[in-house]
Amino acid sequence: MCAIHVLPPLSSASKVHALQDSTSHPVALCAMFGSVAALVLLVLLGPASASIGPTLQRCPADFQLVRRGQTIGASEAQYIAEKREKVLPDAFKTYLQSVKRTGVQLPQYVEQILESRTQLPTVGISTSGGGYRASIFGAGVLNALDARNSSAVEKGTGGLLQAATHLAGLSGGSWLVTSLAQANFPTMQNLIFGDGKTSDYAGWLTSFSLWTVSTDPTEQAIFAQEVLDEIAVKAQHFPVSVGDAWGRALARHFTNGTTLPTLLANTSHGAGILFSDLVNLPTFASHEQPLPILVVNLDSKHINGTVFPGGTTNFIPLNTPMFEFNLFEMSCFDDVLAAHTPLKFLGTTNNSICATGFDAAMFLSGTSSNLWNELNATLAAATANFSVLVNETYPQPPTLRLDTSNYPNAFHGVAPETFADAGETILAMVDGGEDGQVIPLQPMLVKDRAIDVIIAIDAFNDAPNNFAGGATLMATQARMQIFPRGLAAFPAVPTSAAAFAAANLTSRPTFFGCTPSKTNTEAPGPLLVYIANGAPPRDGSPPLTNTSTGQSIYTTDEIQGMLKQTFDIATQGAALGLAEEDREWGACLACAVVDRARQREGAERSGVCETCFARYCWTG
Ligand SMILES: *[C@@H]1O[C@H](CO)[C@@H](O)[C@H](O)[C@H]1NC(C)=O
Ligand SMILES: *[C@@H]1O[C@H](CO)[C@@H](O)[C@H](O)[C@H]1NC(C)=O
Ligand SMILES: *[C@@H]1O[C@H](CO)[C@@H](O)[C@H](O)[C@H]1NC(C)=O
Ligand SMILES: *[C@@H]1O[C@H](CO)[C@@H](O)[C@H](O)[C@H]1NC(C)=O
Ligand SMILES: *[C@@H]1O[C@H](CO)[C@@H](O)[C@H](O)[C@H]1NC(C)=O
Ligand SMILES: *[C@@H]1O[C@H](CO)[C@@H](O)[C@H](O)[C@H]1NC(C)=O
Ligand SMILES: *[C@@H]1O[C@H](CO)[C@@H](O)[C@H](O)[C@H]1NC(C)=O
Ligand SMILES: *[C@@H]1O[C@H](CO)[C@@H](O)[C@H](O)[C@H]1NC(C)=O
Ligand SMILES: *[C@@H]1O[C@H](CO)[C@@H](O)[C@H](O)[C@H]1NC(C)=O
Ligand SMILES: CC(=O)N[C@H]1CO[C@H](CO)[C@@H](O)[C@@H]1O
Figure 1 (cartoon, rainbow, N blue to C red):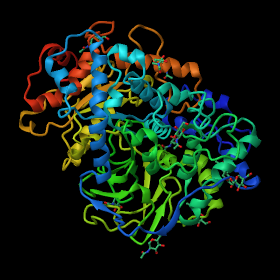
Figure 2: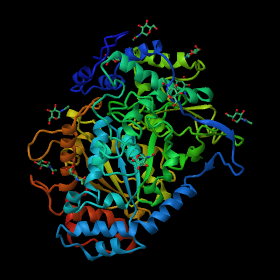
Figure 3: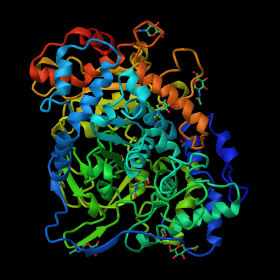
Figure 4: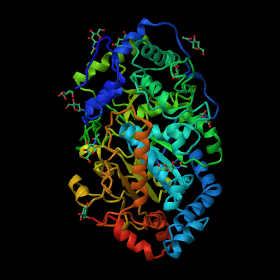
C-alpha cells in the first residue's frame, strides 16, 4: 500500500522503484502521483514562472461552433486526400520493396494493389494505454513498421508506418502519439532518447518520475511551484483542476522545451504547444505524418450503465458517449451526439466570444491519461490535498470537479434527447481507457475514414504478470452492440479471456475479420491485425515488456531491452506450433494490408496469402 506523507520525508525515486513490482491498480496510481507532500511544500515558495494559456477574443466571422453528423470534417478530408495523392503511392512502393526482400513469392494481386495509385488500402494504427509500458511497447511496434529502421526493412515490415493515414492513442499510448507528432516525427530511437543534437527535444527523460522529479525537497518544490504557476493564465478565464497540473508535469517528458540540465529552469517546458498548431510542422506540411488522434472518456453523472468487467481500471459505463481529439476537431462520432467542434477554438461555447490556446497538447494527452476520478476514499485522501492545493491557489466553484479534466461544453443544448450531458456547462473528461476499451479502436470505425486495416497494439495488463489478455477487444465488441448506428462493422472476437488464451491469440499476431459475414459484403468493416504484449519471449529469455503500469522511471538499457523484445513480437510472427520465427510473416502482414482492397476488386485470395490467413486468422 502506498505511503501517504503529510510533509517530508518526500517520496523518492527509490520508493517509486519499490512500487514497481506491484500490479495492483491503486499502487500504480500511487506511483504516478509520487509525492503529494512535496506539492504541499510549494506554497511556501516564491514567485511565478512562465505562464502561457488560452485567451478570449471575438470569433472569426465564419465561425461555426458545432458541426453535426458522423462524417469527418473538411480539413481532415483534405489532409487525407493530399496524403493519398502525394505520399502514399511512394510509401506503399517502399513498403512493397521491404516485403519483397524476404524473398517470399507474393500473389500478383498484392503487388498490383500496392503499386497502384487508385486501389491503395487505408491503414490505421491504434496503440493502447497501460502507462509507460504501453508507450514503450507501442513505440516498439511502430519501430518495427518504420521504413527508417533497416532491421525492420530486412524483416519485411518496415514502411507500413509511413503508409498509415491515422494513428490513434489513449492514456500511455497518447503520450507516444503526442510526443511523436509534436517532435516532428523522429525515429523511435530519437523519440525516446533524443537525438543528442537538437536542444529543443531531448526524448522522454525517463530517469525521473512523473510527479517526483527530485529527491531534494527544495528542487521538488521548485518543480511543483512551476507546474502550478504554469496554469495561472488559464485559471483567469477557465476552470482548472488536477488535470491541468498533470498535463504540465507530463509535458516535461513528452514535449519540446525540457532537457535534464534545464529540468528546473524557468523555461517553457512545452507550454504553448497546441495540438491544432502541429499541422504547421514540416512533416505535417509534407503529409508524412499519420493524423494523430487521442481518445478520452466522459465521466457523466447522468449515465447509469454496466461497467465492462475485467480490466482493473474499468470505471465508465460502456453506454457513455466517447470523444476524440484529432488535429482539427474534438469529435463525438456516436449517434447519440454526432457532433464536432473546432480544436483551435476549444474552450469556446458560443459563436461570439472565442477561446484560442485551450488545446495545449499535453493537457489533451493528460486528459486521455487522467485516472484521478477512480480513486476511492482511501486514495482520495492522498490526492485531495493536491486538488485542494490547486483549488487554494485558483479557487473554483464548489460544483466544479477537481479530479477530472474539464472542458467548457461546446455541445451544450445539442441533441438533448439523446446526449445525457447536453445540459451541462462543463464536460468532465477522463482517461480514454476507463470504459474498458483500452485500444483506441473507435476512431478507426468511423465509416467516412474508410479504414481497411487496423493495426491494433495491445499493452494493457488484463492478464496475469502485466501481460495483455484481449479484454479490450471484448469491450469494443460489446460497445458496438450499444452504439451500432453509423459506424463500420467491428470484426467478431472471442467473448472470454479464456478463449483468447486457449487459442494463443495474444502470444502471436492475430487477424480478426478475415471472413466478413456474407450479408455484409458491401461494407465489411476493417480487418484487424492484433499485436499484443501477451507472453514472454518464445526463446525462453526473461520477459522485459511486462513492467507494471505505475513504473515511470526506466533506464536506457531497460527500454532498449523492451524495444528489442517488442521488435521480435512485431516482426517474427509465429509458425503454429513452432518455436522459431515465421519467415513469411512480412508477406502475411502485407496480405492482411491489401485484403479489403483485394475484395473490392473481386480477386480471390491465393498463394501465400491463403496459407497466411489459415495461420493467422481467428475464425471463431
Ligand atoms: C481503496 O483502496 C485501498 C488501497 O488499495 C484498498 O485497500 C481499499 O480496499 C479500497 N477501498 C474500496 C472501498 O475499494
Ligand atoms: C520565469 O520567467 C517569466 C518570463 O518568462 C517571468 O515572468 C517570471 O518571473 C520568471 N520566474 C522566476 C521564478 O524567475
Ligand atoms: C531499429 O530497431 C532496433 C530494435 O529496436 C534498434 O536496435 C535499432 O537501433 C533501430 N534502428 C534505427 C535506425 O532506429
Ligand atoms: C520540437 O523539436 C523538434 C526537434 O528540434 C522540431 O523539429 C519540432 O518542430 C519541434 N516542435 C514544436 C511543436 O515546436
Ligand atoms: C442513476 O441511478 C441513481 C441511483 O440508482 C439514480 O438516483 C439516478 O436517478 C439514475 N440516473 C439516471 C440518469 O438514470
Ligand atoms: C460567450 O462566451 C463567453 C466566454 O465564455 C461569455 O463571456 C459570453 O457571455 C458568451 N456570450 C453569450 C452571448 O452567451
Ligand atoms: C474549491 O474552493 C472553493 C473556494 O474556497 C470552495 O468553495 C470549493 O468547495 C472547493 N472545491 C472543492 C471540490 O473542494
Ligand atoms: C513478467 O512476467 C514474468 C513471468 O513470465 C513474471 O515472473 C514477472 O514477475 C513479470 N514482471 C512483472 C513486473 O510483472
Ligand atoms: C498454443 O501454444 C502452445 C505452445 O505455447 C501449443 O502447445 C498449443 O497447441 C497452442 N494452441 C493452439 C490452439 O494453437
Ligand atoms: C492525506 C493527507 O495528506 N491529508 C492532509 C491534507 O491536508 C490537511 C490539512 O490541510 C491535513 O490535515 C491532512 O492530513
